[in-house]
View (cartoon, rainbow, N blue to C red):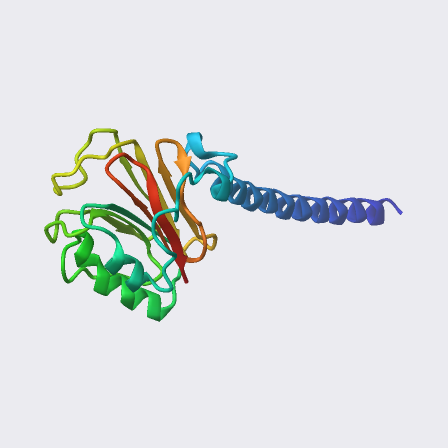
Length: 208
């Protein structure tokens, strides 16, 4: 009958509208994920293979078994770039807190495990002189070539780009680029790249 046909059409329209809404929502979530995995990277680094492009990394110094060992054995005056990906372990986080002052970070920082965080400092620099940025969502630090690194008295030998996503957005990320060369291991935990005064990577590592 006609009333039954109209009722069927109305129900079908409602089902289609409901399905369309879910499809649109899924597409939006997918788009956000794609943006995080692509646009988050600095333009000069997109498509670079981390292991192939870190020229000279780990060539001069042996690999460190822990974050504490890496920080304590890095030579005086070296530039240390630290980015957090996701949520590091409690042990690694404690090591980071202990070692921050050696690269010029301010003592007593209220670090939050799982937050996005970038630190760029110089080994044995004055406490409080390093560049430090922490937040709930993505954080980014960009230094131009020749720009002073915080108040350390040391200038960036090349452009430095460092970005961090903790665990609040679901997809962690750690970007470290020096002069357009990708240096970040980009693993969950604390990612570190060490460069010398010419911008050459002499050490890098990731500690979960």
